[in-house]
Length: 162
Ligand code: FES
Ligand code: FES
Image 1 (cartoon, rainbow, N blue to C red):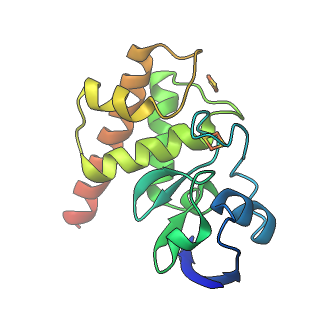
Image 2: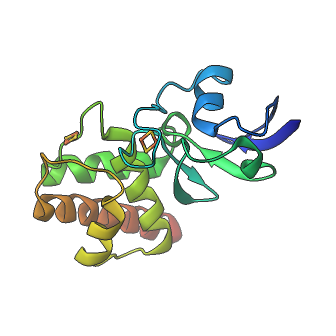
């Protein structure tokens, strides 16, 4: 079957079987290697993407489920102003990322800030639970996301007042 959807801002389509998973299609068909398929059970957070702005594990998603929808991977998101806000906020707070968790932490933050401009510590820790990382303490995680939220809010304010 042919599946058409929006991928990182572009209309795309591919032929897929009913059991094909989105993570594999993104890597193998579109060469988006920032999507990593590791546990394939929705646990490790390495394959996270934004699906219509919500965080989703692409290893569990059959490709046909994204028909007509919008998929954003870390490659696409890294071209946005929001990406710059998040990276700067993380750096200000000393929130580290590595090759295992970087795309998950960044996209989880993006999804949360899209729904909630000023998230509480509880909301942040709930959202970031999708990205297991034993090397970051909860306080730094909260500070990093709140710093990103502040930078995003300031940028929107500047844009609105121009
Ligand atoms: S590959 Fe681990 S959550 Fe998808
Ligand atoms: S900093 Fe990447 S898993 Fe903890």
